[in-house]
Amino acid sequence: MFRALSVVLARPAGKVRTCVLVVLLAGTGVAILELVREQTGTPGFLVGLGLALLPVAPLMAAFRWLGRAAPAPWQQLLFCFGWGACTAALIAILANSFATEWIAGATADPAHADTLGSVAIAPVVEETAKAAALLLVFVFRRRHFTGPADGFVVAGFTATGFAFTENILYLGNAFGEDLAEGTGVLDSVTAATFFVRIVLSPFAHPLFTVLTGLGFGAAALSARRSRRFALPLLGLGAAMCAHALWNSSSRFGEYGFYVVYGSVMVPVFALLVWLAVWIRRRRLRAVARELAEYAAAGWLAPAEVPALASMPARSLARSLARRSGGRAAGRAVARYEEDATALALLRNRARRGGPAGEPDFAGRERELLGLLWLRRTTAGPALVRAAVLEELLPPWQGPPPAPRGATAPTAASASASDAGVPAPRRAAPTPEAAPGLRRSGPWRSATPAGPPSNRPRVLPGADGGR
Image (cartoon, rainbow, N blue to C red; front, side, top):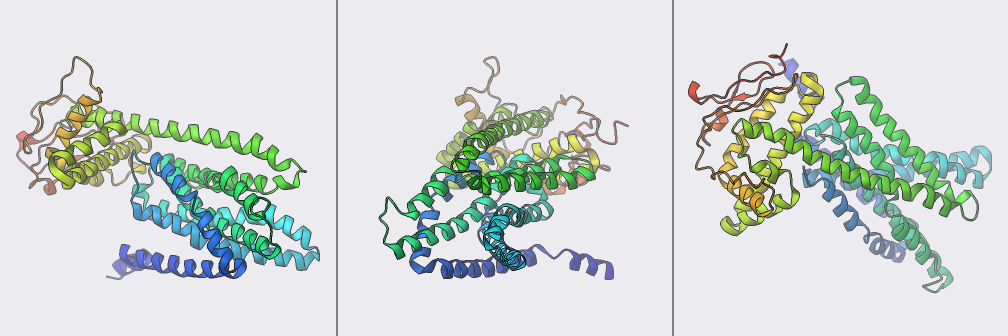
């Protein structure tokens, strides 16, 4: 009893964590909005709010596109955006102000304090505050943090929220200054601030924090405990250095900003865009490779694999399902695609890290296979049809017959999997029998609780290859 109580106290239930986070975000949100409004004035706050909203939707859409292969829950992404916009921004404003005032009092040089605060204090405080959101997702939502692509997306949403609040402050202050001096629109500080922060560098904060996200993403794939600690810290250090260089660019002379922007920011941004596209393609290739083994074991039709590894084919399959079966069918296909991708990435991580990397592989695989089987009758034909229409099948391979009901595959044709990874098992659970899946041994794949004739052939796995 006491052991169970200690576990509950050590790790609160999901609903308790959700309530705590909602209260935290709401409280910090009210505090940061009031603080910004006090600094900018109500007119400046409203103008800054309207202008700061402009880059938010394009940035969120870009990061969402990157994660479409294995989309994270919207609740998680909204939490990351809210953390950046509310909690991280409040921490940064309070900590930066306190540090600058302390340095100014200690040195009696306000100009030096502003410079040191901008170059040395702000990057450390702001990147650490944003990294806290990534750490929370990495620890408590590890199931949805599967690699660098997820690090990209989580970091991007967090930094977009932080930049949104910061832009309100800068644009609101600029508008208040113009309002006091009666400056024209074209010659105003507001126009100059808008051009620099919204037009030229809306990607600045996402670029910095993405470096931290890549560190967490690499740690999610690492089997060594030392790397899981070191890689996020390495990414955080790189983010701080890039942020410090950007903040110090205006102090490198009259053209320092443009030199740093053209020689550092733009090339790094282009490199990260290329890396994002490469990671997305690599993830889809991993989906195709891993699902091919499940297709050989009879869980998927062979034609479903190329469709699940193609984003246009996935979209087409959802459209075909909605056209024939309504929104419910479209949602079923979407969930089927997400579960199949999660299954493939789970197996890919297990292949990299072994039993130590995925200790709950069997249970999670059993859960995902059961979900796939329940929706296969609806999703399978739509995906097969999409593969045919997208011309993803070889000319000599015709589409297989659509599954009828939940009939089991009968022939065993799967090849042995790599050592250190449990092989997928062929199974034939009906929708009613799917919840009865049970484990057949330590770190083994799911076996249906049915007659021996329906059980899949066991291939060499993590413990069988020794």
